[in-house]
Image (tube, rainbow, N blue to C red; front, side):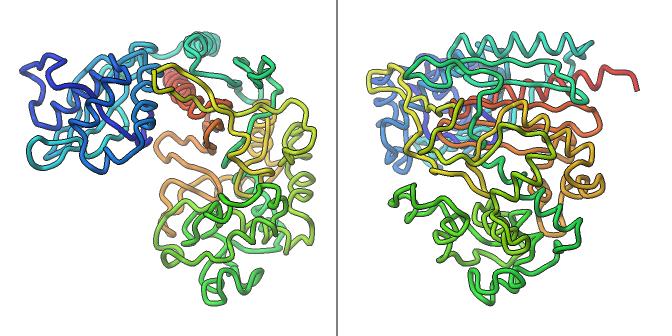
Length: 484
C-alpha cells in the first residue's frame, strides 16, 4: 500500500482474524481487520461476496474488476500483511499499521465505515505509516552497504515480478549503485538496460520550469509577469491579467488539465506541437483565484511551454533540447513522436487480474500521448536524469541562487510542498519530481546537502514507489550515520 495513494475497495467475512483485547474494537477497526484478511487470502469469489455484503453503495458501484485488481494486487505487491497495531482510531474511521511479508516494509491503511449498523465500508485509503520500530533502525555504515541493501531489495521485488526498470544512486556524480531489470518489450522479450529510455510522465515539468528560470536569469521575463503579457486572451482576457508566471510554476493558477474529454475521444496523432495541445485547453476557466489554493495543473505547465515559445520565438522542443539537454549532457532525452522509429524505448505495462484471479499485463500504447510536451510524456534514462541533477547543482543550467529558489516551498502563494516546477519536502530536504500513469512510474530525488541523487524508472504502473521509499530510508540512515 503506497502512502498518499487512494485505494478503491475492501475485504472479507468478519471474524477471520482473532481480535486482541489491546486492539481497538470499533466497527471501523473490525472492518479494517476484515480488509486485511481478504487481502491475505483473497480469491475472486470471496471478493465478490464481500463487496456485495459489506460495501456501501458508492463502493459497490465500482466495477467488480476494480475490486479484484485491488485485492489481488495488494496481496501480490505485499506478499500479505501482518497486523501490527491500530495507528489511529476515530469515529467511523480506523488507520491500521501493517507490515508487508514480502519486504518487511510498513504500510498503513485507513478504513471509513457508515455511521449505523451494519457499518458498511464507505472508503479505503493509504496513509503514511508511523512504525515505532523504524525509529531505532541502525544507521547504514557505508555507501557499499547501502548499495547492497538496494540490490537485495530490488531483486526481491523483481523475483515477485513487481518491478521492471532501472535504478541508479549516485553521490557527487559518482555511481554508487546501478541496475536494470525486467523487460522493455514483453512481446519480443527485450530486456531493460541502463540506457533504456522510459516515459517520464510529469517529470518533464522540471525541464519546462528550469527553462523558464533560465529566461528569468537572462532578464527576459519575471516570475511576477502576468500571463496577459504573453497570452492576452488565455483562457480569457480577465483571467490572463490575474495569472502570473509564479502561479503557473507552483500549480496555484486555478487552471486545470487539458487531458479532457476532447483528448480522450480524439486521435492522439493530432497533438504534436504546443499549439496543438493548447487547442485542448481552449475551454479552460479558473477554478479559483490565482495564488489562493494549490491544485495540480497540467494546463498550467503547458501554458509555460507556450510562454517559452513567445519569448524565445523558437519551437519549445528545439529550445529545451538546445538550452537544457545539451548543456546537461543528456544524450537520450527528448519528447519522441511515438509513431516514428525511436530506438530503445520501453513499452509501459499495467498489471491486471482476470475474473479467475490470474495475472496479466496490458500495454499503454493507446492510452498516452503520441508526443510528450511541457507538462509531461517525454522520455529519458536514469543516466541522463543523474546528469540533469548534477548540472543543476553545479550551476550549469541556472544559477545556484535560482536553483535554491526553485527548490524551496512557496507558502506566499499557498504552495507549501512545491517550488517552481519541483516537489519539495521541507523536512527531509528532498526535491525532485515523479511521473505516473498506467505503465509509467518514474522519480528523481535530489537529497539537498548530502550529494546523493536517486533515479528510479519503471515501465510497470506504480512500480517505482517501493524502491523510491526504500532508497529514501537508506539515504536518511546513511546521512545520520556519517560524521559531521
